[in-house]
Image 1 (cartoon, rainbow, N blue to C red):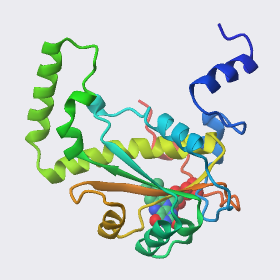
Image 2: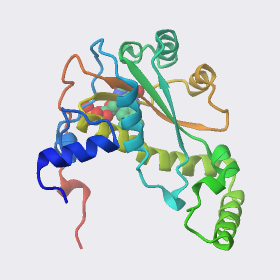
Image 3: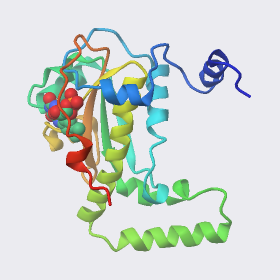
Length: 220
Ligand SMILES: Cc1cc2nc3c(=O)[nH]c(=O)nc-3n(C[C@H](O)[C@H](O)[C@H](O)COP(=O)(O)O)c2cc1C
């Protein structure tokens, strides 16, 4: 039983690297902004692993988890990505750039990895057959769009978790997809959902406005 905040933090630390700067999900949602200027402070392997482990907790339909990540820290690769991203300076400046892409070919070729291991062999086989039929009947473009939608859930998780763990981010769709695929060796059939610059911000970004709940929501 968790008896104090200190004990809770110790328990969590045993499971994944914990940031001493952690804030709540609500505070992260309220304070996260796109930051386009970064300090030259590296992000450690443990921190990155932790961020991606938490991001991978995102839900997806059929639990297919079609997202894939490429973590870029090499300056020459970041510089090439910056060129492919219309010169956006945060791509070359941030200590880390993460490319999130959706890969349905890899997902469908490895369905046994995503079907729950607690199922009986018969149920596993029938679930795999159902998924093969369902997605096999879609056009490659429809499959790619579907997987891109799922990977956007992981993108949202990553942005929020990064802030909660003390990091700033800049999500981007402003890049030439074919060039980024060539630089990173991403399969031609995959869809790049976003690239994300990540690190410690050199400024706070700016407070962009958001619609009020009343503008976006109908209560019935
Ligand atoms: C999927 C996605 C793609 C984006 N692409 C770019 C981009 O290429 N360049 C950029 O400067 N900002 C980009 N943004 C940032 C948005 O402009 C920004 O999130 C929005 O204005 C809200 O501001 P905030 O992130 O500071 O809260 C992107 C954001 C998202 C979610």
